[in-house]
Amino acid sequence: MRLTKGASESTHKYMIDGIRYVCDHFKERAPGTHSERSAQKFLKGELEQWADEVEMEDFNLHPNAFMGWIPPAGIIGIISVIFYWLTYKGVVNNSALAVVAVVLTWFALSCLVIEFLMYREYVDFLFPKKVSRNVMARRKPTGDVKRRIIFCGHTDAANEWTYSIHGGIKALAPVMAGSIGGLIGICIFNVIWLIYDLAGGLYASRFWLVIGIIQLVLIPFFIAILFFINWKVVVDGANDNLTADYIAMSVLKEMAENDKRYENTEVCCLLTGSEEAGLRGAVAYAKRHEDELKAIETVVISMDTMREIEQLQIYTQGCTGTQKNSNAVGELLYEAGVNCGIEMKETDIYPGAVDAEGFSRYGIEAVGFCGVNHDPKTYYHTRLDTADNMSEECINISLDICLEAAELYDSMGGIESFRAESKKRFKKGYNK
Image (cartoon, rainbow, N blue to C red; front, side, top):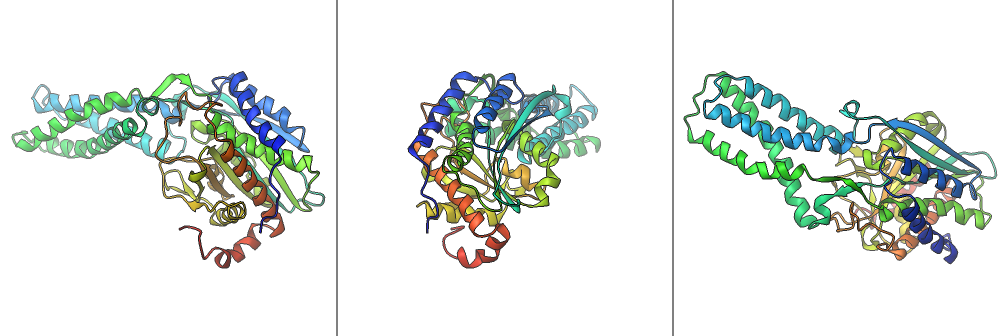
């Protein structure tokens, strides 16, 4: 049974007009830029209309580290192939090149795993430091705060992915598969090569020639990955992720305009900075406020790219499967969706992350809520992610689901009560 009536038409219009305004007035909101911080200051002013408290906090980061290791990794792959052929042809007759190739390629692979797949800081100190910021708005209950629900989006926008705009998945998939698969293969082969060279091998077998040819075939992929990111273009980010920002903000707007407060549940809107730099804003907030977030029960629903109704899904695992999110919050979101006429599924492992994982890392109950196709469309991380390319229907139903989730969370007395009922309530439908 649906507990909320859904958002008003004026709020629907506010979201669309607001996203367009930010896209027009705060261009190039890359992580750690003046434009990103200015947009956060503007959104803080909007939230002050409906929230009892609005906090804006700066934090330091090295935003280019998350993707900045990719061009050096491509160059390392090329250098490794050249080193091998110099050794194979006898131009260099010692093991030094094999040692250097092993060290460099395994370092590149560690960047891939730690920075890109696990979303952890690894080589950040090698890149310039910048300042980003988070904005947190709170609508207090009428009584004591016994529980808290946070709706989260991020305000920064991504640099353009070259192959997303030029061919979509048909271009993106082979470049990523060839370069990543090639790097893994070369890492493994370089160890074999080093052992063989140290043992005084003569490279007489046809095997070494075939391996060398395979490595030459990989060079075009290593060259292509050098241009994976277009550092000159920052997309508007209307879908990714101003849609989530304005949905989260509009939860508080709807409550204020309907003069609604819960008795013991605090409802919050968190707008993070620098999600596109590897969840740095969410991690910074969770780390700084860990004690506060754990002092009372806190759950986080983190939204990202609310664009396609048929792709609305629940993300109970992220960071390429390396970080577990909350099943209980996922079940709460599932029932909210059902009550609004949308039966969402739990997503499979996917190569990416949302801000929910930044909170889950610190033991805070969080789940992702996204409406993006895992077969990326040409608007994803490209200049086509504009205010003219949104789905008002998806944005509106996503807001209704969030309003319903807040109502369910409060009426059930928190996530622990909800968790106790979850097996009975979700033995059908969820995870299908």
